[in-house]
Image (tube, rainbow, N blue to C red; front, side):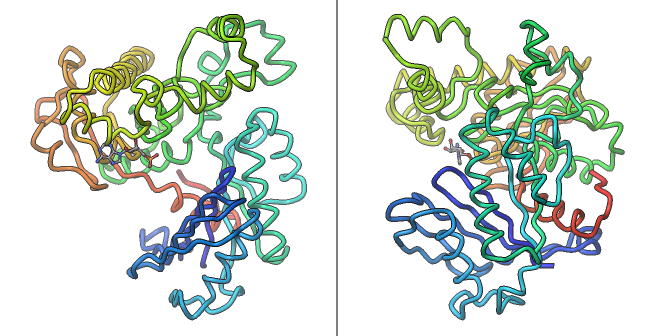
Length: 415
Ligand code: AMP
């Protein structure tokens, strides 16, 4: 089956076409056929389209909304220009899988999209005002373009964390707020944490219920996940993706009194504070330069920039803090897995996170670590390290495509 995987942000649309099916999943023989991204939807959009094994094509086009962006993608997919093997017409797309950020307590697994599921995703908008509306735009656009005959599936970022116990997900605020509004921690990046956990099992041959690991998704957004008995036990993001680690433009954990302080001292409104915490904080806010880790490391190395160095050090220290917390919560872990743009590509950051953790039995093999960059998978622990260390490139799109096939064919999800 050719699955179109869609990931819609407020002004962007990312897609992949993945050829997969139950037998291909079994043999790990699914293929990516094409991928692309449309940025700056709503003005002069930047379009990058690439059929697998061919050079990327870049265009600019005025695309006013997600429907026009998807229309543009679909016209390219079926064009002679794209030449995607096995795809000549719209009928060769057999199903659409959507990344949906917030499923709240309603959606604990991937779902075929029905009117009822759409209502449910709309009900979660209060909890994810930045993300769910964009995801819904992708769903409406795909329904309009493909019609109801092509099944669509929603894969939720939160659902992997639905196994967290109440001791992990409740905030220590009056309990009736949880009852009344479902105000609690949900966690995000679930598809990524789930994918790398699955790969870890494939690499090590450990059965699902014996998996005791900590996964670190370190990209522009960052989160840690404590996985106990194969399930998410705790994770660093909370009600929204703002909580937890230091990220590109989000500061992660902070004292909630800061909000009142900012409103009082800076005369800021709630939306302004929200924008400050989501878009101007983290690595960007600390360094005053950029949210891009690669550039910060370069500034630190080439120009000895104090604020770039401070931003990186605070980023690293926060990850260590969460590692310590999760090792304590789970009475240790068998492995730590690095993923995401930073986790996959930066030996420097991995080395800094793992240094001076000898007391926990964590020792990195610096040579193995330095040799693993540009999205390669492998082990980076020293021979005598009690805790194993892995780099596993994430592949959320593959998991979305596989979940889509399983939902369409009503097959059980095994991981
Ligand atoms: P993502 O959101 O997963 O695409 O990750 C984006 C982040 O990964 C940005 O902060 C990039 O600077 C960072 N990144 C990508 N490649 C490298 C690299 N080679 N070294 C350090 N950071 C990198």
